[in-house]
Length: 151
Image (cartoon, rainbow, N blue to C red; front, side, top):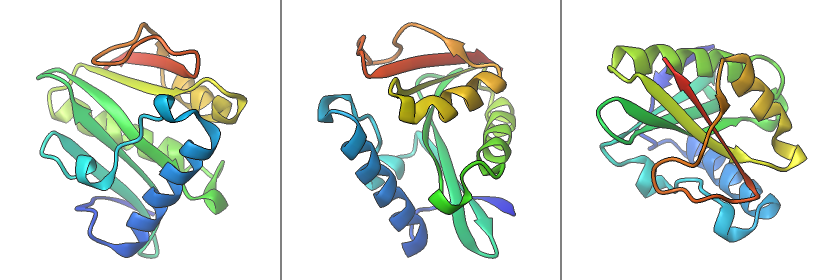
């Protein structure tokens, strides 16, 4: 597997993201879905990576700069057939390393509170993310869990 910066022009990664947003909308009330669309993911303050296996996207993730030292983890997704195979851990380790190299000292995220999101929360906890108050423009939401990590 390899991890590459992605310009989001390939059909396979667009489909992976489309299915991600579709799934989030099916599980979470609309006002609590915070997934970025393609236009938002292509903004200059966002860096996006794809995990490729044989040239096929099997995972993705991004960071969105909130200020010079604080970024938000966005669009973490593993292809359904590859869940719990290490793709998420590989990608999250890569993103943390890249974020440090970019001068980021705090990385935060929002994820779901439902049982469906328990594996994601466990992964983030394994990497040292801890619960925190809402950050940036987020507000308290019973469907959201906020986490942060000093890197």
